[in-house]
Image (cartoon, rainbow, N blue to C red; front, side, top):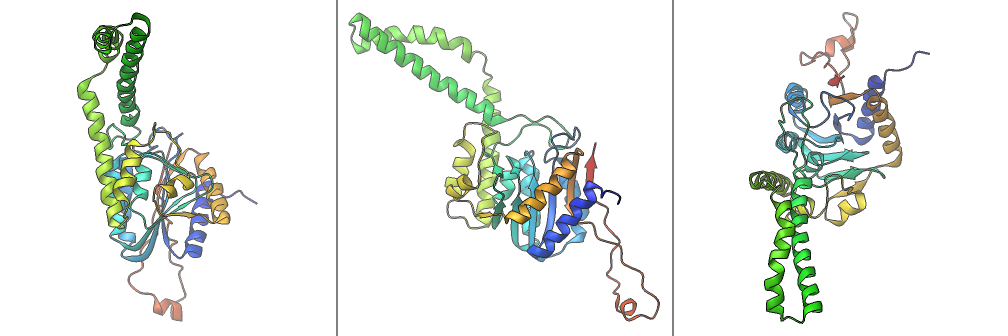
Amino acid sequence: MPKTHPLAQFWSSIAELEAKRKSKIFALVHSHQDPDHNHICGPTLNCIIQQRKLIKTVEKIELLLHTPGGSADIAFRAVKFFRARAKVLNVIVPIMAKSAGTLMCLGADNIYMGEFAELGPLDVQLGDPLKRGSKMLSPLDEFKSAEFLRDYAVEVFDFITATILRRSGMSVQEAIHESVPFATSIMRPLYEQLDPLQIGEHRRSLAIGEDYGRRLLNTVANPLADEIVQKLVSGYPSHEFVIDREEASRIGLPIRSLDARQEHTLITALEGILQNEATVHGFVPQAPPTKKPKGSAQAASRTTDEKPAAKPALVAS
């Protein structure tokens, strides 16, 4: 028998999942091996705009996310779009939804995570969000470097002061006076490498994620919105920090365990397209209407609202 194409198998699995979960699923899957489109950026929003005619207001929309992150602006706009068209908006994370992907989760009524699924800090990525494949910069990693230097300066000053007190018999005031030039000579070369304007830009970028996150949490009336956002923005040490479902639940997010069989189905389907370096956006493509003989009851009952099949939303290398 001929082998089913991974993309066709993926959509088949999603269609089966829609039937089981009684929802309409929008897939947002990025392959890190796709050189052109491996994060949330302009094409993500373009796909949503192109497919908006396929959906009106429905009972439940679920976002299937597999993404390292990307543009917070586009992630925020996407969630607002789906929230306006569904009474219930859920997110499904079989493996990962980092950074801007985590931001999208904050606007969900429920977040279904697999056993090995992970979210990440709200680390808004810097770069041109409309440029396909543009390399993104982590402001959290950069800002944490500045925080480290601040803490290190205090440690150096304390160490020198304590050493002088222990070895010289000076008073505390005298020891502090002598410690300042020593600590300054050590720290100045390090601080001279920092760009104040760049640090300010990084802080503003983190503030963007903080504001968007709070707004999305407020749309679902999460009473811990401020605490959750503060933790996601500044409570973790790096962009890559793993927030599993236990940690996500602990900080106050509406986490649900993804059914083990559904998790297996999704991971298998994802592996098929990720191995082919494919990025996928969109709803399950609609099958073209089947032609019926003239005069049949089914043909007579067909309405004029039938739409042509949607093209699969696939961006591949």
